[in-house]
Length: 343
Image (cartoon, rainbow, N blue to C red; front, side):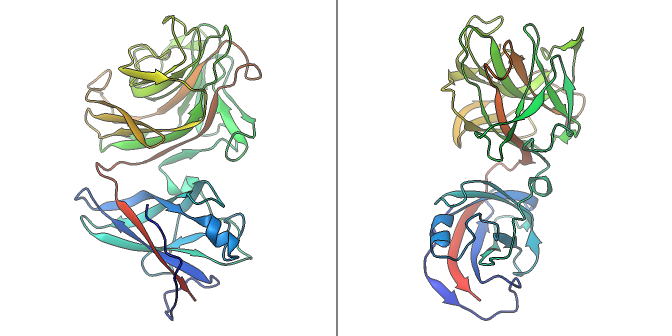
């Protein structure tokens, strides 16, 4: 992600975004040996220093990214950390040549600008649940819902609902082609509830199986993870995170670790074949070389969110802040942020 220099270079160029005072170049070096198109890269930027120097708006609303020509705007999403040393920004880059270095620019220094952060335009699928559940089909009873809470990055999040027997949740209206691999990112936590039976899962699913007015995801999971609370139904245990789970209550998990009840960023990287990597906060936790219910008969599959909540969210919340799907590559590009230039 690179450290940026405080040196300022005054330049004269026609390739400059009109109305902006400062920029830095960003070198993106392709590592997989493949040409990448419309690939989402993660840029980490120190915005604290720029804001304290009066060069950037305090809300980071004047951040813009352009292609190599310095003018063509690129879609981006500010994930978190404005006014910190590690502001996380995802940028959709139109093309990155194989085994080569691509240069883009980040601009700032326009006091009248407002944020252009847009997850929908940046990712294959994106939802931070601030506009309801229009991107999802819901299953189970009680139904999933969105609600407000200060723990969410934009104040809104998702709860799967659920009853005391089966899981409830949602599956995406958009079907994702997984044949070339996909990467799924989410921010989620599952608090532990006394004498409760609750979990929260994220799967790539193969379909749905109706059981009365409820939904049973057993036998229909391709790969995914489950965050479990206490007294988990059918398992007798809980308070853990199960990676590579094959059932809605976390059964069949190949690896688990303690659920610390805090928010974490979870990443699933699937290569399109049989390899699945599971990360928490950027740290690889488990690698599987198999997928459930293979071979699949269809490459276009939904993302499935859900869980079970014996208590309503006021007593025992199931927090899902956002979920996004981006392109997969076996080795992520490396990023280097360069020196500041002034118009």
